[in-house]
Image 1 (cartoon, rainbow, N blue to C red):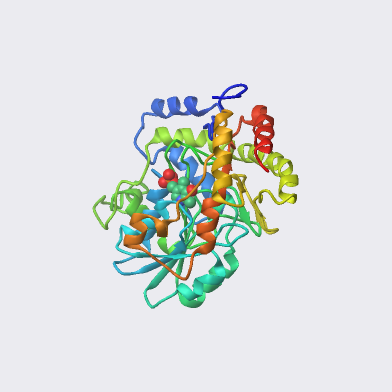
Image 2 (image 1 turned 45 degrees about the vertical axis):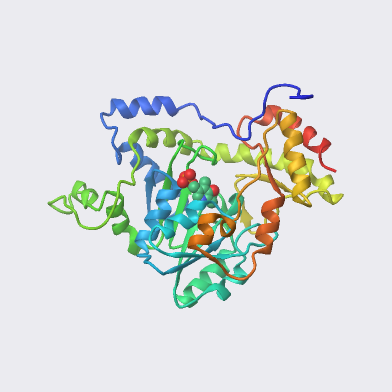
Length: 381
Ligand SMILES: *Cc1c(COP(=O)(O)O)cnc(C)c1O
């Protein structure tokens, strides 16, 4: 490492609120380590209250929650699901597992979210759903998207993996589509290592969601005393995490506001620091539309070309600062080519994917953020 001063600054460092281990011990003392215990119920109640959804169910991951969504929508072989190509593989995989074809639509230049103006051109007889991704915790243009879905009788799934505690016109992300999914992966804002949640907004899916979640049984209604037998009633799988995960997550949810506030401070500091280099035309900073309340999930910069971006990542790495690029567009990936298809050209996706770099953003970075900023500024020109 040449010219590095101080310790290595990682891209991400998982934050602990302090109560995690105490709650995990409490879960053990409660005598239940399997899922759907007191901590799971507390997390569900928190999510239902804060998101305002009809039902929330913890899952092993956002991936698992998206798989549940595809099952609940009864997605079948040959069905088409419209989504951005600029996203994580799980957005597509969840539907491909049911035999569906992901139809990739280009993104907007400003937010890097699906370009709602291109969605209708991608709709065919086989289209069943639109899966939107709120990139960096900045909302997609949901009014337009919900209107399109209503006119064409399509379902909307929000991949809100990055959208926890962000909002669109005052409505929490995850509360707008028929179904939505959160991620509590260690790289997200609120974490449990691996973890996620399915959010059910359309009441008609609530009962079946619980059945799929409990391996296709009516175990939940049985425990509530609604039925006198606990039996196999539908397809399903083991989607529920154990109580240790729920206990860890509860310690994070309790501090959700504080975590988000601290991330927003870090984000703002970056945003101010890079205003001048944006003004000089060297990089572009993130854009947050007026009616979107974001959650500081990510701070990224867009360089004029891939060469400049790569040089920046290498230069910062040499100084002990870990920055990363993001998605390889799905339509260019081997599985994306095999299972999906593009609708129109995806020029914005391809261009932005080559030019984006994400800076370290985690609670606790504050003490070292000045070094990240100074070093970054030395290498932006
Ligand atoms: C992180 C992420 C996922 C996957 O989340 P897991 O909890 O790891 O399954 C899916 N979609 C998007 C947009 C993500 O950022």
